[in-house]
Length: 68
Ligand code: SF4
Image 1 (cartoon, rainbow, N blue to C red):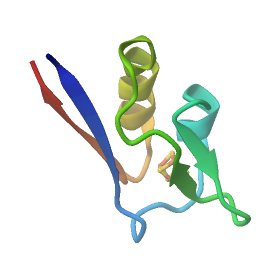
Image 2 (image 1 turned 180 degrees about the vertical axis):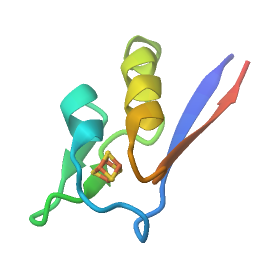
Image 3 (image 1 turned 90 degrees about the vertical axis):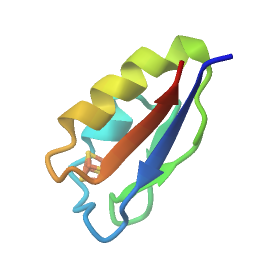
Image 4 (image 1 turned 30 degrees about the vertical axis):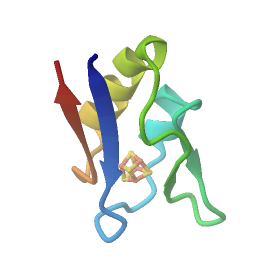
């Protein structure tokens, strides 16, 4: 069974907010606008938006690990 896990580098996140704009079911923000991961292992239907959010983080603060 495939899996996708999301990891956040809290030191690299500067709070652009693209992640929680693109995938609000997976990412949220703290009081300062920095990313908080809501679903570290998003289900199948949320994986495409999660990949997009990770790919567009300007700081490279997010990464995913996928198994087929
Ligand atoms: S898009 Fe990147 S820098 Fe912006 S809040 Fe999300 S993780 Fe942080």
